[in-house]
Image (cartoon, rainbow, N blue to C red; front, side, top):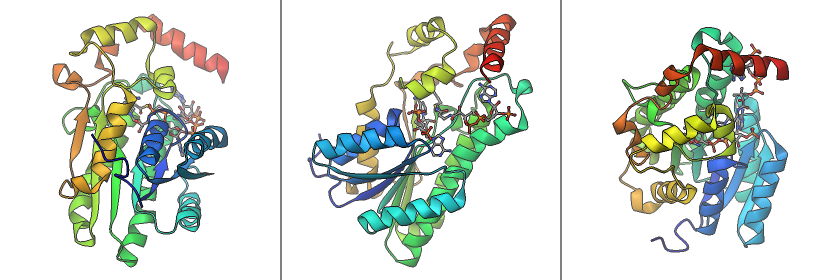
Length: 284
Ligand code: HXC
Ligand code: NAP
């Protein structure tokens, strides 16, 4: 569908690029000619993703960075510029999430997720945005949200994530207008379920829940990483110049069937929650 050099000449700063969907996007964008700068907290997965890109002849570099820390984000952006010159696009993909009964959350649990998702996305967007404005460069931001980020939706049992992703969506639409005059575009993708170790280990309480989710899905399957990576590549490319402030849902119509991806956890018995909470306490 795409020309092989669709993203040639682009330098893309991508958060959470060592694992899951971030990794898949990084590999795909690099295949399409982009130079990738990846950040995340752990060095190992970032290094492995970069090595894979370099192996097929692409360009990639990384630094460790906790996006909750604005100074660390500034340093990472400066390193990215040193590596590749001006950065053209940002993908806010890093996230934290888990299922929990909201009345049991500690303030730190709430802050931890909101810090990564909302503050982290703001930090990266502002750090790059202010450079693009000062240098009259233009730019492109793609935010990975969720279907339950939509107004009047939300989802039970993932309240910190729902609050934070709704905030990211509000930032996307607000800045799409505010920064259009600087030729900075902002869009979002709202994925349905895409199997990743990070999401599955924290959000799927059992194999049974996973099977039930698939059985209830209109297409009877979860998303494939290349489906999301291709959509992201399109939105970042010049083919999508006039798309600004949009959120594209890619979920096979899952949320139209029943909004709030984790609302069905209402069916989990009290005892299942108690078992999960006890297991976590034992680990910590
Ligand atoms: C209740 C929890 C918890 C849980 C952690 N906490 N896990 N509370 N239930 N399952 C609490 C801790 O007790 C602590 O509070 C606080 O949260 C911070 O936890 P830490 O482990 O100290 O924090 P940190 O190491 O910064 O880890 C952040 C994290 C972790 C968000 C908690 O899960 C993480 O690193 N996640 C990154 C990757 C990720 O989540 N990927 C999934 C994205 S999927 P106290 O008070 O004890 O200090 C996604 C898709 C949604 O977003 C849709 C899918 C279909
Ligand atoms: P994932 O593999 O766990 O990805 C999350 C990434 O964020 C990890 O690479 C993680 O790396 C990084 N990260 C977490 N906290 C960070 C921090 N403080 N600073 C910097 N990086 C941090 O999960 P995923 O499923 O691929 O999720 C990717 C994106 O898709 C997320 O925005 C998620 O909300 C969204 N999404 C996923 C699904 C799905 O079904 N998979 C559905 C809807 C939306 P470190 O731990 O090394 O920092």
